[in-house]
Amino acid sequence: MTTDAEEWQRWTDARKASVSAPHGMLALIGTHWLEPEPAEPVEIPGVPGRWSAAADGSGVRVVAAAAEGLRAGAVEAVVDGEALLHPDTHAEPGTARFGEVLLIPIEREGELALRVFDPDAEGRARFAGIAAYPYAPEWSVPAVFTPYETGERTVTVPNADGRERPLAVTGQVAFQLAGEEYTVTVSSGGDRLSGVIADASSGHDTYRFRFITLPPPDAEGRTVLDLNRAYLPPCAFADHFICPFPPPGNRLPIAVRAGEKAVLRG
Image (cartoon, rainbow, N blue to C red):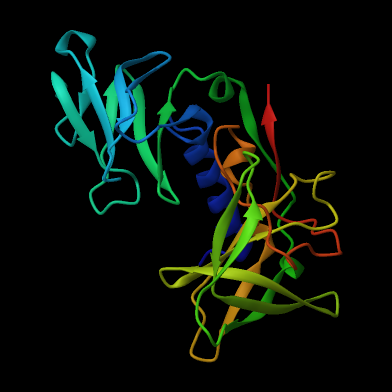
């Protein structure tokens, strides 16, 4: 039977493998926002084809000639003419490839963009690991989730790209650390809870904010907050990600010396 510390080490190893994969977070070299039709299609540096956002918001449209070598869809057929790729929020999202470069359409608040993942990205080549605090059981504490009586709410928070965007939140999690009571606002995704937090170590000993995920609460709202698994947001690995900052009330006055601290680069 594995211990909590061993499970944490497996999680840590899996995180490093995921972000450094050929098309992992470190491979992102650009997020290109597209104007909706009838705006003229645009060229994206280093990527074949001419790109635009479909007028009805259904996806990203590309026009390319077969000689350009762009492949799209589940069967990666060569594009010779026009192709429509559904974004990541669609039930059947689309992707395209050019050599080893992966192109992923995304949709955020009704706006469409194309993300470009290159296995030869400098960030991936320089990656030397993720600095993290050693596992410490005192940072894994019982917590209680209380959903909002009115259901999901929306708060507007700054994002890493400088824009403000709505963040859907569903309730608060209460817990104790070193005998003090704290609460943080969280969102629900599937049956799990997630949140964006900062603390007294943020921007100094750790990245400026971090993400947390909690197991599904039971019928009485009981769950576990394991800050050993506080993890770096995508924008810590590549500047082209858009990540929400912590909502009001999610900046803890204490230093959380647990979880991931920073990306190491060689």
